[in-house]
Image (cartoon, rainbow, N blue to C red; front, side, top):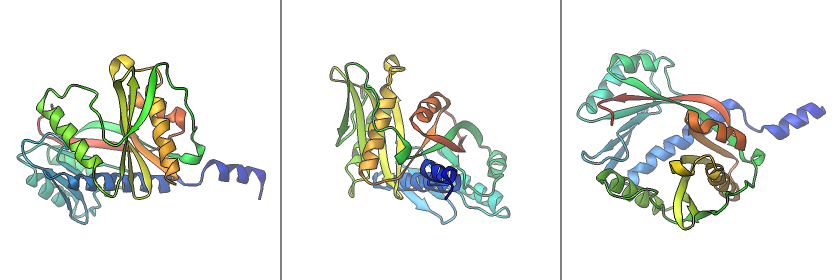
Length: 267
């Protein structure tokens, strides 16, 4: 085999199409995992996945995603699904494997609008750094249960934290929580979710006054190392424009676009 081909083999074991499939597969399992919450119902219609949440609960949101409609059925199916959520806010996720390709036009026709675009990114764990300089006075810890970075002084924060605790306690274990502590104070966190044989990185968060110090990178590397120890080969995430550069420096590459559509009044 030519040296160039050997180098390419070492650099990349998966095609972008395979990584897109890994991303959506992990996201689907992440959505299905919400069924562990007593106030959430996950419904798989075969051609779309939906989450319904009891009124008064602020997390997770009503969600529709992973649509596999035909061009002929798309408009009708969107109308049927939106009608079931008319009394509540609803988010709709379009990913790389969503069909038909023009589903956004059907969503717009039924009163939804695109409110956010994220970049779907993936990395192959054998290509990622295993160490990252930890900022001074920062300690990264793996916790059995998540902490809250903010005071639980609102109903929404309390409900969200309760949900995170319940999900972390489900068996078999699929969630690992990492926290960055500064002198004993939690200042950053992220969640590693194992689904479909893929490491999903969710909710990399650092308190504003502690950003741009490398804390997010340290959290990310710690979670990727744990995924590697679990024997996984791929990690995926959805990146905002603010985080995309950090993820790229660790080894993630852009593989697709993710768009979020909303119906209902936004907070």
